[in-house]
Length: 111
Figure 1 (tube, helix red, strand yellow):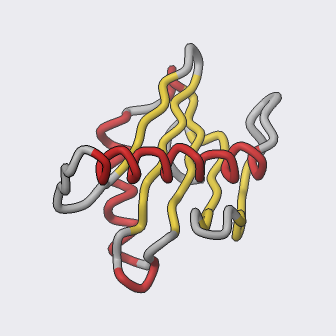
Figure 2 (cartoon, helix red, strand yellow):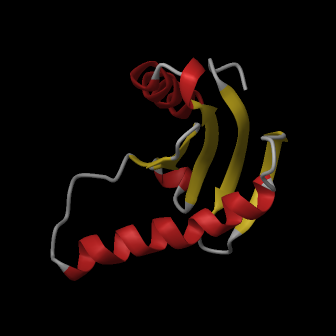
Figure 3 (cartoon, helix red, strand yellow):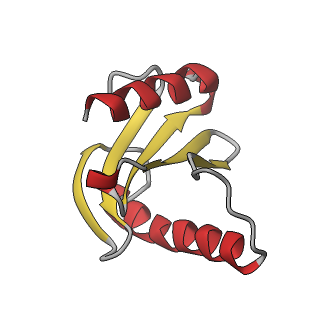
């Protein structure tokens, strides 16, 4: 939540669809439900990459752009955390997206 423009954040297991923890209350959004639903986005993207035979080194993040918000899904790719991702809801007007992505990479390294 220390990220500029952060409205909410959750840690999600995309294998079980379980939200492991969340913080923040974006207006009009059930954060736990949205984070759990984001598992479908992650699964679909990983499946699509597999379907076309494209195997990048690793999938870092998925960005969903809304008119007033960014929803950023950051996969935690370290072996210990395989199957987990961070779901971050950001105020589009107060967010430096490249800065947030950099900060999330640093947070992942610290885990």
